[in-house]
Structure formats: C-alpha cells, structure tokens
Amino acid sequence: MARFQLAQVKVSWTALLTLAHFTYLLVGAIVFQILEREAESNNRNHFQLEKLNFLANYTCLDGAALEKFVQVILDAWEKGVNPSGNSTNPSNWDFSSSFFFAGTVVTTIGYGNLSPSTVSGQVFCVFYALCGIPLNLAFLKQLGKCLTIHLGRLKRGMVSVVPHKQTVEALAVSLFFISGSLLFLVIPPLLFSYVEGWTFGEGFYFAFITLSTIGFGDYVVGTDPGKEYISLYRSLAGIWIIFALAWLALILNMGARIMENVVVLTHPGFKKQEEEEDVSSSKLEDTSKT
Figure 1: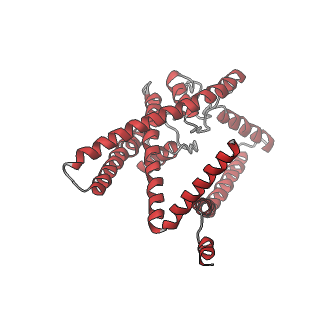
Figure 2: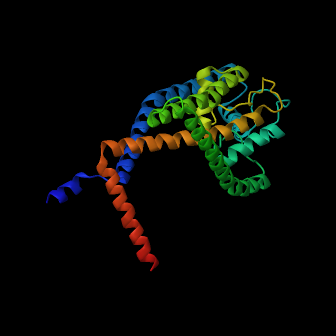
Figure 3: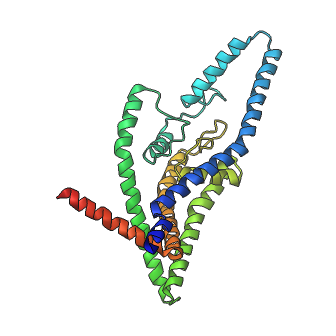
C-alpha cells in the first residue's frame, strides 16, 4: 500500500518537463499579448491615419490607387528589395550578402527579409538546405567537442591552483561562460551598434535572436541603404554566427545538465524512476527484436 502511494506521488521526469514546457509557452503567450497587442493596435491606427492624411494632401489619388501602390511596396519588400532609396542601393545578392544568406539557410535562422525569388533559386535552396543542415549540425557538434576539450584543459590547468574538484569545475565553467559571452555576446553587439547606428540593447537583441536561431528579421545587419559597408562585412557576420552557435549550444547543454542535476539532488526519486524507465524501454526493445 505504501509502495502504491509512493508511486502515485512520483511524477516522471518526462511528464514534469512536458508540464513545465507548455506552462512556459502559456506564460509567454500571455505576457507577449499584454505587452504587444496595444502597441500593434496603435501602430495600425497610426498607419491608417497617415494614409488618410496622404489622400487629403494629394487629392489626385484615390483610395484604390493608394492601396495598389502599398501592395507594390509590400511585394518589393517580400522579394528583398528595400522600397526606400533608389536603384543604386547595394545588391542583396553580391558575394558577401549571398554568403550571409547561405549561412542563415544551413543554420535554420531564416530572417525572412530575403529569399530566392526565381524558381531555380527556390529549387536549389531546398536541396542546398537538405544537404547543408546536416553538414552544419555535424560541424557544430565537432566544434562543440573541440570547445569541450579546451574546457577540460582549462580545468586541469586550474587543479594546481585550486585543489577542490567541484570548485575547479565551477570556476572553469564560469570562466568559459564569461569569456565566451564577451567574445560572442558583448563585443559583436558593440560593433553592430557602431556600424548600424543601433543602441547596444538593439545590437544585443539582434545577437541573441540570431544565435538562438529564432531569426525574426526585424534587425538584420548590412541592410541599411543609406550606409556604405565594407565588402566582407556580412561574410564576417556569417562566420561569427557559426562559431557563436557552437559556443551557445555547449552553454545550453551545460545549463540543461545543471538543471537535471539540481532536480535529481532535490528529488532523488526522479533519477531512480528514470533509470527504471530506461531499463523497461531497453527490455521492450530487446523483446521486439527477438
């Protein structure tokens, strides 16, 4: 009876993660709705008011003509053409920009501000992504191994200074996190802010949204038609993305392991139940094979 009650109290690690995951999504949905819905309504009303003012100032135009022109602008934007400026704007498909686009394809960032407009380009993009995404994952995995090796060397180098093993591991991980943050999440946003004319907050927001592969496309480097960029600017940004992704993936894996260890330490039953589930699944696989 006591064992049955204990089994009822236990909650599997998978169920707990599922509950936490969907609760997190629900909380995010509610918060984003509260923060953004009113601003969206204000922006929509402001845009409609600007259209009415434009029609009032230019009486030769009617509403239908204006809507048609707005549609032309939207079509141009969807095809990667910046409506502002003139035909002398920098090309979106020079080598540097194409290299940057190729990087966003294989990393699955997909900003959405640029995409192939020709049928041949779209077909090539599909097959390029099919081959490039696994290749990029393998490359990032190998980079992660190299970073793990360097982290291990850092731990061994600190043993002579700090003899306590757990303290050494905590210090090494902290040093790895701080140095990587400076190299990938602090210095690049400063450079982007200087070149693009953004605030540091906007630069950091772009860096995090990029490296987490969310890629909203509201901030993208090298797209301002009023600025002159060096030829390799976007290519260098693409290289930064690749190496920063490997570092961030390693950090996220460390964070997941730390969370799991904390749960196991505070609730030892989870670990035992997880091991029992693994044994049961292994037996089931062996039975199915025979």
